[in-house]
Structures are given as structure tokens and as C-alpha cells.
Image (cartoon, rainbow, N blue to C red; front, side, top):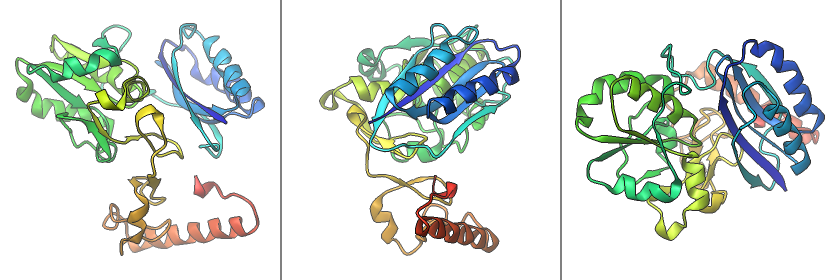
Length: 301
């Protein structure tokens, strides 16, 4: 059984580049794969490995400056959901693009999953999904507002254009694991919104702790690994990834006339040029050749 650990921590790293090498070495030495992001504002990412491997990497992360109280969320996978280990240096660990947005200084009120239903059912509460459009498309909370953003970087502009819709409303926000809400609730507080709430642990914690019979969640939750989407109890759902656009599709979508393995699906058929598709077909050919040799091509991941 593979343990999947999703983590983030806002802290102050004076020199993230100095942390990268030892962190990557700790992951590789323990057979852990996935992606971790380092920036001056902290660390974010998801990794997977054996129980012993994950424990060793988490111990390394907790020893980093300001990370002693690190919290993370765990789930399981039948097979390794990542193809390699990457530790990347970034300007932000979750990119909003608004300088000075600091969840350590200002953030919304955390709401435990057990208390979330009561909050979002209140008539004076507006519920906003801070995730991207392709994530919202496969599942969200009932009655939630979908900003229809392609990127989290688009959220500040969407808020500027729509803030009047939420006059005299309390605002409840949610995302996959909580990190985007750290930034978005800090942003709204800085914009003068007094009552802003944040689902603690995100959708994943809600799906883990709230029974399906009591849930206000409909559909699946997109996750950024080969499991693609999970439901209540963090059960893996049948969604797959289109290898061209990286959006989630269902097995039956393969039967659509627009679908071509590794090249396009019904969601992205209008998004690419013929030159793009030629490049994707060549990548798919290389993947097939690698499989025939009994190897794995990184394009499959």
C-alpha cells in the first residue's frame, strides 16, 4: 500500500535554494516520489511512498525552519501515483500574484468539517469555490459559487468584478486541501471583508470525516496525481486524465468521436493547433514504444 501525504506550511525561508538539495536527497533516499514546492513563504506539495519513507520525509520537513507544527493529510493508493520526485523553487507556493498577501498575518476563520454544513446552509452565507474551472466541473458543494477561473491567479480580478454580489454576506471559502483558501481568505480580509471563513483541511478532510449520508458535497474531488479524483472516504473514483490537456474525463468519454489517446479529448479539441497534435502524437508513439520495451515513459505521468 502506498501512502500519499499532502502538505503545506506558510513560514519564512530565508534561502529556499539552500533547502532544495537536502530535501530532494531525503526524498530520493527513501523512495518517495511527488512534487514539493519551496519559496520564501514556505513549502507545499504532495508526495507518496511507503509508510517508512513518508515518515522519514515528514521528519525532514518538520525539521525545517518554522515547520515543527506541520500538518498534513494522508490517503492511500494501490500503486505509486507519481513518476518521479521533483523539488522546485517558486516565487509563491500557491500563486495568486498579489504582493503582500500573507496568511501568517491575516487569514479567515477556520471551520472544522463537522461544522461546515451548518455554516454554508445559513441564508446570510455566500459559499465560494476557489478552485479552477476543470476541478469544479466534476464536483463541488451544493449552492457554491463557481468563479469559472482557469487559474488561481485569476481569482483577485474575479473578486474585483464581483464583490458587490456579496455585500452584507458572510463569505465561506473552500479548496482541495486548504492552501488556496489560506491565500484567498487573507486577500478578502485585506480587501475589507469582515467575516470570512475557511474549510479547515479542505475538501479532502471533509470527504474523509463527514459521512456520505450527511454530506453537502456532490461529485468528485480532483487531486493532482494519478488517482485523478476521490469521493467520500477518499475512495478513488473512475476518472482519468486526458494526457493532452490534463483535465479529468470519465472512461465513457473515450468513446466520444473527439477522443484520441494522448492527443485530445472533447474538452480540449478546440484548444490545440495541428502542430500541437502532431507533437502529441509523436509523444504518444514514444510512450507505446517504451511500453513495448517494458519500460515507462515519463509522458505517461
